[in-house]
Image (cartoon, rainbow, N blue to C red; front, side, top):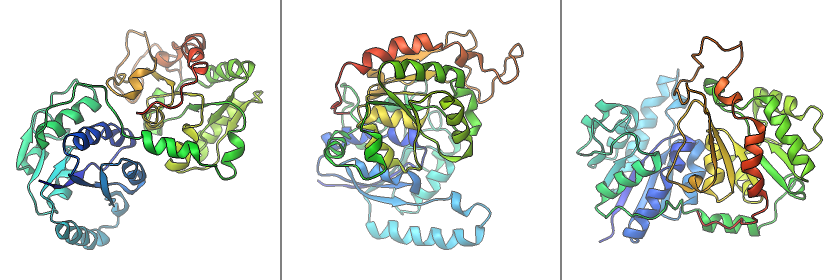
Length: 358
């Protein structure tokens, strides 16, 4: 019997991507089920790429910050829209108060994580059914376990499949418009060099990026770097100093970046959503982990990962806590030297497999 579901997973880019393999599992177990996704508008494009998603319902609580007067009418409008869809059930996979409260607007039983499993334990009080998914497992695996338990099918044992193979293949067959077409005329590697200001200690040092750019240039590759906003632009300018093969990317949305990713030779990135997006699209690459724990269990785990050998890593802290460090120094990232990165990256530049179906 066909079932119509509402999924509530608002953000972030990495969390949204780590939900996609669970949708692939669901689609294989229940191919006649339909799923709509309530999500932050900035990530709705990614949700729409998955074939199991019927409708994307963009809604942002953030845009009402400091504008409480518009929030109530927006919530009433969302409530009317959700209730008119007549969902059979609602699954909140985020486990936050805000996601649970939005899920309840649909007027149907809400399923979610139990108190020991949710990010905000009190959110579990708002669920009609609760499921235990132990912490300590990779985010992809936790999502797959939650969906299998909530939707009543055996947990698949195979590798995670993001379900983006078809859309990636379609993009590769299309001709890119300017200025993107010119960027792809020579072999290139993407470098996801920056993170949010709150997690600057995830970033690899500029001096290390410069050495990597030199190695890539000598091997005949350009290094393309996102340059969104003043801070990223300043980092790119510093990396590009004296490096003719370093190219800043124009302002881009997620779809434009994704269409560029499927044409790249490889990527090098920090623990960021763009690294996970590239891996989900099947792009070989190398992710560098300093203060955070390396993800396993998804498409990204097919490619090498470098983890800092510093005794303090991974600390999980957004700011380096070491008292012995020099001002501005991030020891865990500095210890990942360019020679290590090049040794891991170089084999990926010659394997020529750009059609991974993940």
